Length: 236
Image (cartoon, rainbow, N blue to C red):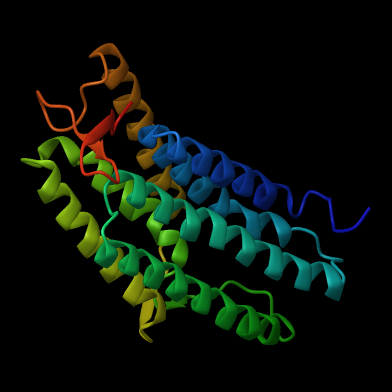
């Protein structure tokens, strides 16, 4: 069988599965569950590198495979999935789609660049880096769920979409801007993503109890179709 299937990559595969399921959910307008899958992928991504490094006798091929598969998984989970969620949330105009494409391109360029750099670095040391260079693409697993957490506070859907546009543009630009960002400790990062996942689950079930009314209070935001009319509820 082609590929590597030991415990060092299992979390990466699970993260990909969560991202793939999230894409299907977003396509069917189950956006809160899609955002939940995004946060889950982020949580799994916190552990995969640390788990891989517990195997001390990894071959060069295993190390290089781990670098490549992690980046490919990140592109799906934190590139394609957020684009799909944002598109289904209402970023459907030409300008909006251009923003999403540029976001995805910035993530792609970042991942390709650091694949090259990481291979060189791991040839010298496997120790964790103390700083990020630019904003990691996995940050969208925190930023986008937080936006959805605060969705009930927006006055209307236009305000929500305006903030979403700004979020995607700023986060995407920071993927490729060269600056140093000190890493949070592993426990702080895991706790942050875990809290986001927990809050998303809570809001999902609260919305279920309230009959789907989630955003904004007292109103139902609906998906704009190509014809300009409104179809399914945004937060089914």
